[in-house]
Length: 115
Length: 117
Image 1 (cartoon, each protein chain N blue to C red):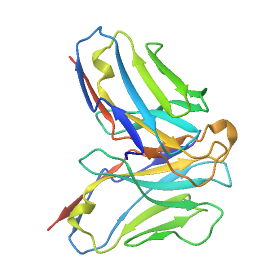
Image 2 (image 1 turned 30 degrees about the vertical axis):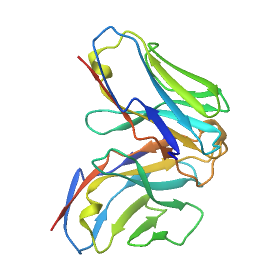
Image 3 (image 1 turned 60 degrees about the horizontal axis):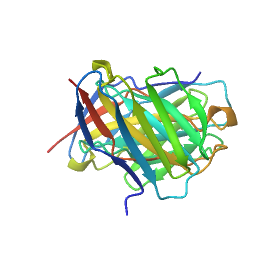
């Protein structure tokens, strides 16, 4: 069983469209994240949820809206897609909220291409 | 805010040789956690090794080891007996133990490692 699964793996869409990326983890972790990896491979956090509650909301356009129906799921909805949104989006989860030496478990990423 | 710097955009190593990837970070905290992640062409992010700042002993995982210099805020990764499968992007990451940091990982810009047969 895949620990953190993201769908779809690839997404090609036109400017102006609305799209969603889904993420599910079966590790029992209580914190989930969305990271964006740009064309230069730089990874930057977008959002963090702990037990369905939004904890981190970095400087991200309002067109990006995360939704966590339960602690095992964190979806990312993007409205009015722009060319600059093209990137790889990673979902991740971790076991503890209060710190600790646990790293993240990452999904395999979603490559979004806006044309 | 913490920053993580990887000063080597690319490194190359001969198969079976040893290579060291550099990472420095900036923080005012005394306790924190450091990680190295590997990203092969498959895009998957894989945890290679972790280090708690309160531990003086350097972490080791098989062929991978770190040189953690807390005073210098340096956290380098040494790969011994390099294999073709080690070719990947390597990311250094910092994690604060503070509750309001949200468990966030701050990543360096990455080092692309090439392994020559």
